[in-house]
Length: 297
Image 1: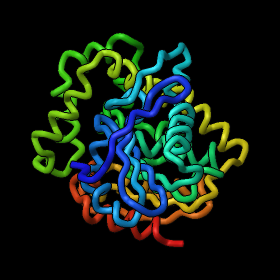
Image 2 (image 1 turned 90 degrees about the vertical axis):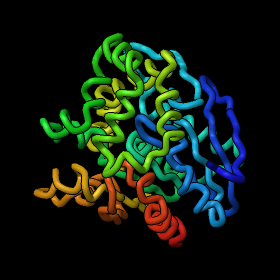
Image 3 (image 1 turned 45 degrees about the horizontal axis):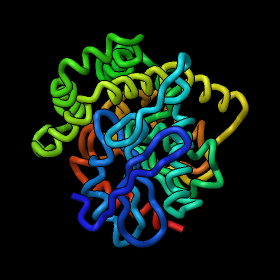
Image 4 (image 1 turned 30 degrees about the horizontal axis):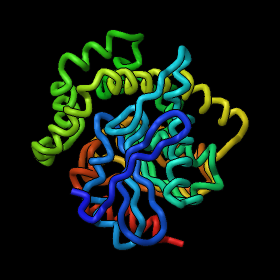
């Protein structure tokens, strides 16, 4: 996995960010979701390395990245703080301006990057997400039951921390079984890596803080941007699971593209084959769609 890539632990202002870097060409940052790490991009990163300088990073609190101390308002784990991490990390790697693709939680960091740092982000792809505030505003039993981390992990500590810590294997197995179109596409090596990433109490707490931030301060940031008319200026590609909630939940208002057009000026996208983890289920197809978008000048 990640053949030809180097590994770096980048020391930032208040944490460290682990990243794998490889390839040649314009810089392209990949950000993962829950319960994954940068490892989710293993096949896509190698496929795109001949055309892009690929950076696959662990978000703060995930994988091999650091877990800074949180606060009562969860702001150290707001997407705004995570976006600053990535701007600093990319600068350390020599990239003042870059493209970014994010899946799940990484997609939320990606669009916050584009909103807060428009001079740093030239293009953005968001995979199987709509904006955080938009999701919460539309939340119902489908979201609560279908994507249980939204509500469970946002509960006050220590309940979710203790639950995850008691059975990290059950968390991963439920996610890849419930949200994926087939759990069989995850090798034992990959599955075990995701379970191991959920064994450390500091990382478990950090991940819960990130979900608490999404339920509180991230929503506030999004609402303020909408009220002030702040928009994503760069081209945005939205891809979503053809078998998941985004394909069906918001059809009356035009689906994910209509929602993203309330936030961004230049939006394109489509549903793709597979479940929530389609970048891992169908890496070849996903890589082709991303390459086409990011190579389009």
